Length: 311
Image 1 (cartoon, one colour):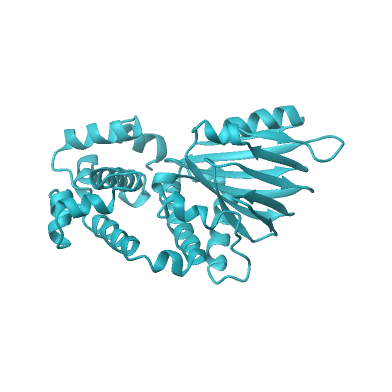
Image 2: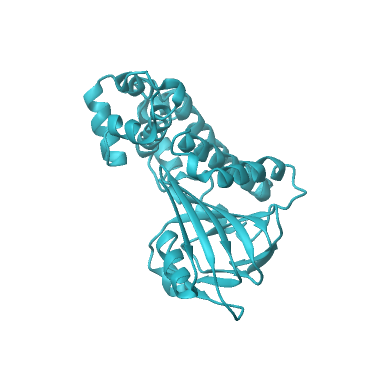
């Protein structure tokens, strides 16, 4: 749901960003009157934030990070001005068109020493293709304007930010998930051979791709996945032992994510909810409704009604 707020004092800005993101400390780095604006649209569990502010700094301190709240990765695209990101012993200055990732569960600092505009994507860590250990290798490392993928990622994020109020009615959730997938590809490219060379990671990616291709199959479970990929169930579970989700949890989460995307697709507005459930592997309407309601805290019918205006 889209929200926007303009503030005219630094104290108000400090409160606002701690509420909208994760708890943060902040500092005003220039004298004089302070003003800033924050526009937010939460699309499923992905946050899109557009920020315009005068000079300031934000800090996720050791104490705040240790509290464990807010397991997110944040990707920041510099739109205007410059920003400096510090995390994991690295420091990078972002110019317009450049972006970088950071982890809210570890300390970081962001400094803007002049007026700036920034687009931020806030991604739940268990919904991102890279693990925390992998992201830790590339925090405060920029994807610069010369990188081949920047020309794809940056315009999409800019477009999402420019039209932030409209995505509730135009399939924004699907676009947000597509953007996160693209960001995963871009960030994997920074890792290079470190990620791509991992046989275990490649195997796990292949399993996840298999699951995504077979979401509509009611038989999809750990046994089905293991047999189709020529391994034992025990080996399959071991492959995901260090991941935030089990195989079953991955299947359930991907089904609910895909169902939410289908429910608010304008091209599927007249398709019955039961048929949407069948497209993600549910053979009965009540089972789909219960699962969707548990995952999204709202029934599929109400979710569609809230997010999609049917003409």
